[in-house]
Amino acid sequence: MEKTVILSTLQTIPGRTIREHYGLVSGSTIRAKHVGRDFAAGLKNIFGGELKGYTELLQESRSEATERMIAQAEQMGANAIVNIRYATSAVAPGAAELFAYGTAVFTE
Amino acid sequence: MESYYVLLNLLIPIILLVLGYLIGTLLEKRHFESLRDREKKLLDTPVVTFDELDPATNPDFAYFQRTEFAQGSVVVSVDYFKQFLAGLRNIFGGRVSSYETLIDRARREAVLRLKESVPGANGIANMRIETATLSGSGLGAVEVYAYGTALYESALTCATDSGQTM
Image 1 (cartoon, one colour):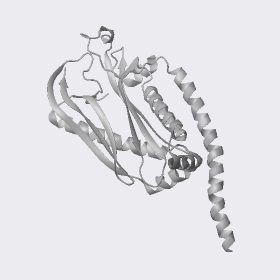
Image 2 (image 1 turned 45 degrees about the vertical axis):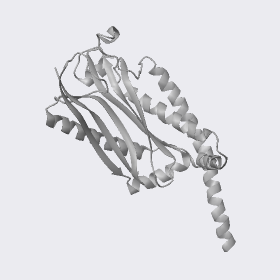
Image 3 (image 1 turned 60 degrees about the horizontal axis):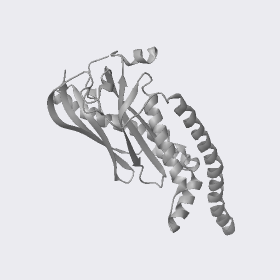
Image 4 (image 1 turned 30 degrees about the horizontal axis):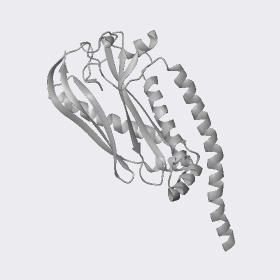
């Protein structure tokens, strides 16, 4: 496995000590819906159930927000992000903002 | 010709309501069955919402060697019939039970997916649930995102290894 930034929703990382604290890092993305997916979702909405297209869409957007947060942390020289939280908001009709934030730290 | 259009305009929503009711109820029943089955299988993976992992304050957690970020998400929508019911409910107010099952399904599915994404984990700490509504186009859909930190006793660094050893 390649060396990556450790992500954690905890305040500490077990087995490691936090040496340095770089402060808040965040990443966000705003995604609009896809017309094709929207059409399929509209049909699916008659019967109810999971809308797979949307699940994937939001998952992609969220990982993009996470990537941006990681990039910011790497720039600071951090090797871990602790206490990560996510927030979602509807900014405009048909568009959603996905926001990830956490604390960049250096652990050993 | 005009009466034909009137009839058609009435008929389409009625067909949608009936279809929504029949197929929606069936799909929901199946989903709840699958949720129960999968929840039983994953009972031995505890999920907690606290993060007292400092060995100094909580010695129970001292043996965890490795953690991993884990997540699970799902978008679920209600059927046409339930949407109609909720619309009626809006006039009089009160409990919207047709949407309660929707939220219940979505939350349980998201937590299950979170658990299923980390097969070898001993537990998941500091789990959080995020709920978002999909706005626009009259969709009665919610997105639920569950995320947390998976805990492992073993110090293996390769995720696939821990999956095989379990």
